[in-house]
Every structure is written in structure tokens, then in C-alpha cells.
Amino acid sequence: MLVLSRKNNESIIIDGNIEIIVLSSEGDTVKLGIRAPKEVSILRKELFEDIQSSNVEAVQTSTTLKQLAQLLKTEKKGG
Amino acid sequence: MAEDKDNIITFSKGLLGFERYSQFTLITREEEAPFFHLESVDDEDVSFVVTDPFMFFPDYEWELSPDIQEELGIQDVSTIMILSIVIVPANPLQSTINLMAPLVINRSTQQGMQCVLHNSTYGIRVPLLEPESASTQGG
Image 1 (cartoon, rainbow over the protein chains, first blue to last red):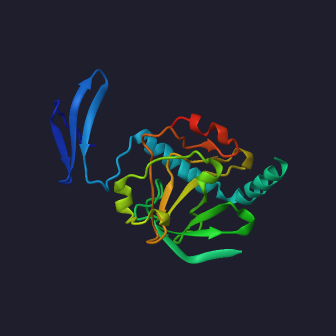
Image 2: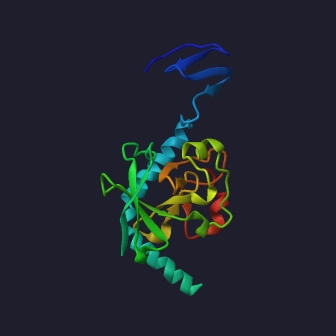
Image 3: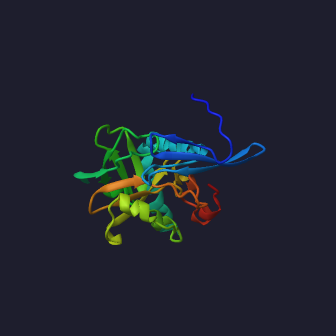
């Protein structure tokens, strides 16, 4: 991993067109500003990982679908 | 059984965790309605169960950003299809739906992407069979 020190209002440029600016830092919280082309997806890592693992789980469990469809039909008849 | 294998949808960025897979087909089987399979053209083991989220959550609502509309080449909103990924565990009563990261597909160009609704409170694993809890599942 590349490690850099930056002060408030200083920034780094990635790949010529993505800029990450340190807006402020207070205690253990750093506020970042990001300028990037709009097709670049930017996500908090926790959210990224959560969606990723949910997608993986979805693929692993997709075989029991027929059962669910059946269940739904039964539920509709009942309610 | 109706399997439309020619109907290929391109997710140029893939889906999160499956970035290498960009081409999918939507497979409909009568006995599985209202669910579909979104299956990778390259690997049939990469298959997602998807459904129309509005059918289960009529109040589901969010704004499709102009950036995404542009990226998917959406000219006419009537060509948009929204699908949500469903996790169907061994006990299908515990199935969940991902309302935080829906799939947006432009049916006229067959381009799709998984959008993340950063600013919403919709959950990633919302119980499918208890619709009333949808909006209370924090993201």
C-alpha cells in the first residue's frame, strides 16, 4: 500500500482524473472531497462489501427458488 | 417453459462481487413466477434470483439520477426495468430482497447496472415476506 501524508486542503490525483482532497480532520474523522468522472463508482467500503457479500450469497442460494414461488402462491391463497 | 436465451443484457461493470461477468440473460419459468433468473452467459452457476421490487413493496421509491440515465442511454423512461436481487435460503420463508442496490436495465439498449442508493435507508437484506418492515431496515 502506498502511504502519503497530506494536510487539510491538500489533495492527491489518481490516474490523472480522480482527485481526493482532505477537507478537514477532527479527532479520528477525516472529511474527504472526491472529484471523479461520473462513471466512476464511489462507495464507502463497508457498504461495498455488504452489497458484494449479499450478491455472493444470492448466487449461492439461487437453487431453492421454486420452493419460494410455491410458498408465495400458497400464502396468496391463504390470505 | 420459456427461456429466452437470445435476450442478452449487458452489465458493463458487472455486479458487485461479480465484476468479471458482464453478459446475462433473464430466464423466466412459469412455475417460478414472479421470480426470474438473471444468469451469466459465461457461467451458468452465476445466477441471481431477481424480482420486481414494486410488486412486494408498492411504496418503494427513489430517484434515478441523470448520471445513471445517461450512462444507460435512457431516452424514454418506459424502457426502464427495475429488478431486485433476492436471497433464497434453505428455508425460503427467510428469503430477503436487496432494496439498497437494485438493478436498473434499459430494455431498449439491453444495458444494465447495479445502482447503490447511498442516501436511502433501504436495506440490503429486507425480509421478502414481511413487506411492512421494508422501510425500517437501515442500510
